[in-house]
Structure formats: structure tokens, C-alpha cells
Image (cartoon, rainbow over all chains, first blue to last red):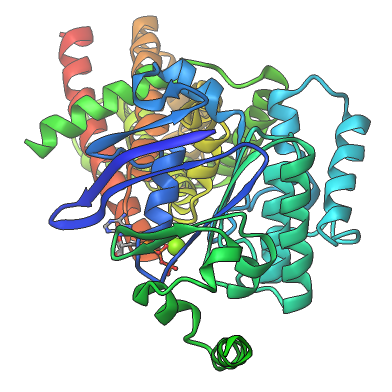
Length: 255
Length: 245
Ligand SMILES: Nc1ncnc2c1ncn2[C@@H]1O[C@H](COP(=O)(O)OP(=O)(O)OP(=O)(O)O)[C@@H](O)[C@H]1O
Ligand SMILES: [Mg+2]
């Protein structure tokens, strides 16, 4: 369980996060949604401890991050998995080595055990035949999936994904969404996903936090997001023609 | 103020380099890779430069000794002194600041820009230890490069001397053996170790703490080269004053 209280973050004069409070539960996939530039990435990086918020606290199962010393922080971090918006694969390693990397660093497994495990997660992200490619030889979507495989290979306690399915075709995107939800339940992980994809919202949004200009504008679940009358949320959700039609049908049905 | 801040950050980085070490099995491969990139990969250019600059030093000295009263073996002596004392340790280090330094800054800087360093940090890895420590260890072999530079500089001088007809082989050999002070070699290697430390850490610092995108990686490499050279030149002055006078 991750609890965020009154999180504030600025870059110089730009006040990017303006007092966000929320919480994310174990075993549930939580989504942070909002327009481009609304502060999703900054919010996630604050959770990860890559940005230091000026104000506010973040606690992981009761441990307040800012009160830990640097070794405790590192120990906590070794229980986190992160998928960066730009994948952030190590470009001097092959795809297989990238996925094996957390295992090499933090487990005592031997080479064949690590390879088996890496093989297993790579198959789960639909990448069974690219083990020996370098990241620069893989497509953007493949890199994304490798990044996901790397994030989950060591069974993290906390999983953060910054737009895990941007750049993927709709079919693969759904596979990835379902995969993340599955492992979240299976290993009781606390998962936070940044997204602006309404398909993901409908598929896996057990808890949804809506950010607008650095403020939490709304909070709810996939069941409630289509019923809310909050103008900010409806503007976002019904910006696509498809969802507008769905909404219309829903309203007509109710009459 | 920013200078003071950067100097502080630099020393904190040095301290962090030794904290929370990376697993040895992983570190070992990183060290071998860096030895290959930084040391083995520099041997060619260092050999080439040393040989020819050694030759030029000899020619210049020979041409400037016009008085018949000065013995011919002085050419060998002067070449040996300048190669061992200054040319190999200092001049080669400045060249290495360009070659090795820009490589270190740009490779670490690119990792910063593409969030690979963030990825390491998020995994709970001490990224400074992971990235800088193997370079530091690899560059502890740098004196080996410099001894090759010394040797080839003197050989280059010998070749130039004989083919240019400035003096005989015997005179040159007498010259390079004359009044040999072993401490001069010690002094040269003390300098070399200090410069090796600068070559590993200053470019790493500029790469690690850079901000921005690809353009800034290029700028950071240039800044790193300038600062590494400035520090090497200053330390050279200080160490020479302390050790030789
Ligand atoms: N390192 C930084 N320095 C200064 N400003 C930043 C920095 N990172 C983000 N910002 C600013 O913070 C705001 C929010 O950025 P953020 O990257 O969180 O958006 P986002 O919601 O993730 O958008 P997207 O969906 O496009 O990824 C932007 O206005 C951006 O300019
Ligand atoms: Mg973003």
C-alpha cells in the first residue's frame, strides 16, 4: 500500500504538482490518467524517489520514504519495478541480458536459472524470439515490452509503469494490460500505471486518479468513471468519437 | 557559488563511488570491459603519438645544439629527460583527456539522458559505484600506458637521431644512460596515478550530473575535456613543485 499526502513539486517557477493526496492498494492496478503535460510522469518519479518533492510525504507500507537513510532507500527500491516512458533499456546489453539484469544484481541464481526465468517473462510479453537482439535493433513496441519484462522479472512488490502500452498495437496493448493486472493479483503487487489510453482504463482501472494541471481532479474506478458528471473527467473521457457514441447510447437507454 | 557547489558534489561523488559496492560477479565484467575500452583501446594512438613526438623532440634538440663544444650525447639525454618528466605523463594525459574523457562523459551522459541511470537507481543500485568505479579501476592500469609512451618516445628519438644523422647510436645510448636519477621515474609515475584518477572521475562527474538532451551531452563532453586538462595542468605544476624542488 502506497499512501501519498499533500505532494507538491516545482521546477523553478513551474508548480507542477499541487498538493496531491491519494493511496494505492496492494494487489490492485491503479491508473493515473490525464492529458499530456498534466504531471503524470513527475508524479510517478516522485513516488520512485527520483524527484524530491518540496512538500508532502509518501509512505510504502508504513515506511515514509523521506525518513529513510540512503541504504534503506536502496533496499526499498530493490523491491520496485519501473517501466519508463522511454523504456530506458541498457543499450550495451542484449535484450536477454537486460531482462536478466535485476536477477544478476539481486539474486543468487545461477546462469541457467536466470535464463529460464528471463525466458519465461519474455514469453509472457510475447517476445519469444528476440533474445539476442540489441535494444537498438528492436522496434519501439518491442523495447517497451522488454522494459516490462525487466520490471517484473524479479517479482517486485511495487510496480510502476509510465505509459506501458503507448506505441503498441491495440491487440498487444490489451495483452500487456492484462498481463500487468494478472501479475499484480498473482503476486499481490501494488501497481501504479500512467496512461491516457481509455482502453486501459476500461480493462484494468480498478482505481483511477485523474490529474489535471497538477491537481487531483477526480478519483474513482472504471465503473464510476463513465457515470460521473465531473466536467473535467467527461471532457477527457468523451473526447473520442467512439466514446461519445457509447455515452449517447447509454443515456438513451436510461431514458 | 556554482563552482563551490560543483566541487562539493564532485567529492561527494568520490565518496559514493566506494559505497554500497556492486556485486563482484557483475563488477568484474564491467572492469574488464572498461580496461578494454579505456586502456587497450588507447594503446594505438598513444604509441603513434609517442614515437613521433619523441622523434621531433630529438630533432629539435639536435638542431638547437649548434656549438661544437656541447657533446653530441646531450641529444639523447635531453630526449630522455623531456619524455620521462613531461611528455609521457603530462602531454599524453591531455590527449587522453580528449580521447578517454569524452568517451566517458558521452557514454555516461547518454545513459543519463535516456533514463538508464534512473533505471539503475530505481532498481536500488548505486549507479555511481556501478558506472564510475570500474573506470577508476581500469585507469589504475594507466601507468602501463605511460610506460609504453616513455619507451616508444625514446625509441622514436633514437630512430630520428640515426636516420636524420644528428648523432650516432652510441652517442644516443650514452646520452639516455647518463646521470640517470631513478626518482624522476618515481615522480613521473606518481603524477601518472594522480592524472589517472582525474581522467576517471572528472569526465564521469560531468556525464553523471548533466541535464538536458543529446545536445547537452556534446556540451558536457567539451566541458569535461576542458576541466580535466585544466586540473591536470594545475596538478602537474603543484606536484612538480612539491616533488622536484
Ligand atoms: N525535469 C523537469 N524540469 C522542468 N520541468 C519539468 C521537468 N519534468 C517535467 N516538467 C514539467 O512538468 C509538467 C508535467 O510533465 P510530465 O512529464 O509529468 O507530463 P505527463 O503528464 O507525463 O505528460 P505525457 O502524457 O506527455 O507524458 C510539464 O509542464 C513539464 O514541462
Ligand atoms: Mg509522461
